[in-house]
Each structure stands twice: as C-alpha cells, then as structure tokens.
Length: 230
Image (cartoon, rainbow, N blue to C red; front, side):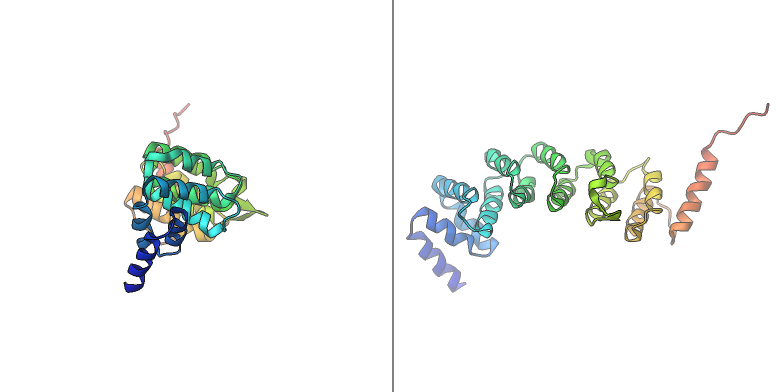
C-alpha cells in the first residue's frame, strides 16, 4: 500500500502523458482510479497512446482497455477506431471492453467481429456476446460453429468450444436437434457441452451420447405423422 501511495504522489507531480504512462504500469485496480482523475487531458493522452505505433504493444493494449472501462459508452468513436484497426490486438482489446459501452452497440460490433480473419478476435467476439447474454445471436453462433474458418486441416479449432458454451447459455426450446447433431461431431471434446445443452432444454438426464441419440430417435418417431392407409 505504501508503494502504491508513493507512486500516486509521484504521478501527481509530472505532466499528464507521463502520469498516464506511469499509471498503466500499476495493477488494474490501482490503475483505473488514477487515470480517471486525470480528466480530459488524461483521456486524450490515453487515446493518443493507444494509437501511437511507437508505443509498446503492452502500453497500447492497456491504454485502450483502460479507456473503454473508464469512459464506457461516452466515447465509442475511440473503440470503433480500434475495432477498425488493421492490428489484431487493437481489435481484440476493444472487444474486451465493448461490454462496458451501450449494449446494442456492443452486440452489433461483436456480431461483426465474428467474421474477423483473426481467430483470437473471433473468440473474443463470442466471449463478448456471452458476457452481454446476447441470446438474439443464437442463429449466427450456430452458423459460425460449422463455418470453415473455424477448422484447420479438417480439425476443430478452440473457438468452436467457446461458441458451443455460448449456445448452451442461450439454449431454448427448439434447439434439441442442433445439440443432438453435435453429438456426432468428430471433436469429442464438444460432446459434454452438447449434453449440457440438451439437459437444459429438455430437463432429461442421460449419461451417454448414445442414450441421447436414442431418445431423439424415439421422440422423432413419436412426432412423425402416421401414414394413412391406402
């Protein structure tokens, strides 16, 4: 505590840009209150640092994530600039703090970034949708779960697990068949999440994928219209 207090005193005596850079070296819980006290000059210093390519990646990352947390939805243009950046880590950093902004805006951008060329950015987009509980994005998530960009050499990439976890969170009636289909996926690590989704939607309890598949077949047969005799 004494070291942090001394750091704050030292930061108060130097120009705004230096105070901002010094604050960014502190742990997050100490960093944000100091940066928030810097006012408009500190905000501008954070913005400049975030987009200054002469700055270290760490400083730029911390600048944009601090900016998003402190100024939330009041200055979304800065986050939009980062989301449109050619640098993947800027897009990723902006997505991480997007939930602090207005929900509609954040959901829109997370959905857009589901198409990003960088795997880590697409994964952050899924996590953002989960954090915002954006169940309205269910159809897009199912589409991306099977998208070719989320496979490499025919093998499932880790983002598919994140997508499926989101789909379990958003699971509702009518999704049973989609989760049953996942039980046939080559990536067996996905099967337990599919079972979680089925349990949530149906309130049934089965141990194995085979049992769930049998349950689904019986249900489909029961719901199929009986053939009329000719």
